Image 1: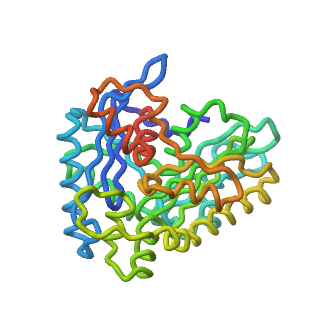
Image 2 (image 1 turned 90 degrees about the vertical axis):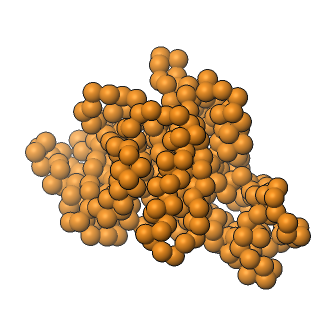
Length: 350
């Protein structure tokens, strides 16, 4: 299934721009009949990402985007961005046969019933899916105008043109469907653990996406470990990510890490079981773990031991060609799991 909006633009070279809460990730791909090739990729941390001042944080984010563009040498100004969190909803629907002119109204009514925010002040889009039955099926996506405008403002301030707004979970699925074709027909999940949000995307035999964004993520885990060990969050972060310049004494964080991850593990486990019950499908066979926090040593192994299914680290760039030079290859080998959303965004067609 190709999850994309059919927007009419004359240019098709875009960059995938993943604006996270702690870092900016950019990927540009060249697409041809043989697949995708990375032509540029970069990741830049956002200075003072924990800054309470929203204005200052946005200024630092724009600077990070500009810095990433400069480092990658990307020339195009067409960017595909994405949103996630409580102001985003992805749901599938099934209606009795309706006249074409009534479908949009039915989708909007459905959105008002299932979205946990005011749909009247939101953007709603949908894609119909042939089901071979006497019904109208599809997937609707809704997000608040406030969230979309914020992401668009950041790209515009960095002198980019945000030509398409995607959803993190669907971007992950887009990348997964392109490079994990051997998993087709099986029930699989993608767990993207970032700094502020965790995205869980499940795809089963019906090819319909199930997406849940959870507010418990890497930053919360770090804070919980810091509290238990009476140290700063920066100290914990430096240790977990193996910061070479850290002058802090090394702490044994194994037990604290396990405790701090329990909420995430419980939330993921309950969601997997809910999906199985709702969809009446086989249980999720494997969880592909990506995102910035997936780079923490021992984290994926902990999930593999604690979740009721197999968990593996997923770096899609292991299967994507790169001709952007050894430096780019080094970035993708080291940070590839953190750049999966950006890769999925770069695969969009406009």
